[in-house]
Length: 191
Length: 191
DNA sequence: CCATCCTTTCAGTAACTACTGAAAGGATAC
DNA sequence: GTATCCTTTCAGTAGTTACTGAAAGGATGG
Image 1 (tube, chains in turn green, orange, brown, blue):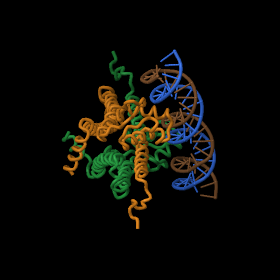
Image 2 (tube, chains in turn green, red, orange, purple; image 1 turned 180 degrees about the vertical axis):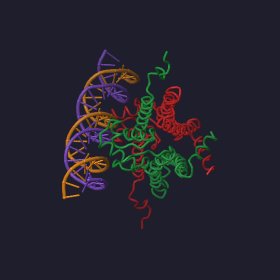
Image 3 (cartoon, helix red, strand yellow; image 1 turned 90 degrees about the vertical axis):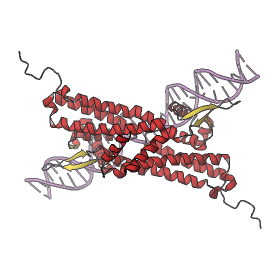
Image 4 (tube, chains in turn yellow, brown, red, orange; image 1 turned 90 degrees about the horizontal axis):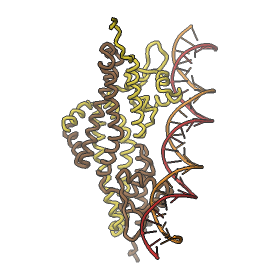
């Protein structure tokens, strides 16, 4: 009897790897989408991250079934964002792309961007609203009106929340380079 | 000389209040959008939060210039979500809506939902991928292939990140304000 | 200088999401 | 019962975002 052959597992390891990677890519794309990130961009990033080896534009196009134009634009956007990098191989004209390898670094880049583009403006707006309806602006008696007071309270509540959230983001962003692993350790120990 | 009149401020306090509220509503809508939340829904919620008084469907329609259908569906979705509530006034057939007043409670509801719908599935998928390419599934020699090892490492990195993020969310969901404040304290103490 | 190989751009289109308005569906009052 | 008042639903449409493919734009090598 020949038992030599690697048993009828019926699965080709290379195929199995690819399937697992595709599963990850698909899920990552879905998640990105619900957080306001273009699905294709999230998928490209997931691909570069999970295969952990530089891919050229054609690799990406084939694997995700997207057009050259789409690939080019999305790759460029990811580079601008800073979570993937361009690279070259000697004697090969093509450009290759690879993902940052540290998940924490990646997310701290994303967090920094989001803070700057969304949270900071909200905080600024809240403060502006507060100024618009303070005593100086609308007079003492008007400021005592019920509806003004209610809105004031709500603005304060929201301000406090945004401030605290900002601080957490700040911690992540600030500590990214100086070893986010420390942040991780601290949090894991504490909770 | 008549200095009695409340000085030519040129601003009507009621108008000023409304303008400030509108500013907040607009900004909140924009932010919601970039986080994957329908702009109108975010605006409705912002309106109910900031005026801090129950509003009926027509109030919402007029203030945000949206159709009855849109208002009805969006209000229902916000109710389902749990961040606004329906209420009634005696002797008035209309339904009124009001926002939760505690920002922390609101966001912990949102966080719980996001965790359940997006983060948990991602974690599950990561684990599934790991199982698909472990030694048992693809054999020892195949498991030692470079590409398999690389993907394994990446899955581990991502798993760690999602686990820690999950813990922060958990902290927030369980204890809303005090939970997040604690995260901030822990981080501040450590750095 | 031209040929080759690769990348970028963008007008046109496809796909998707959000919104409207009118009709149908309750509920309450009389 | 039916009149009134309000809410919900949903087919149709508007508006937005994402994608394609082909043409133009480099860069490198001979």
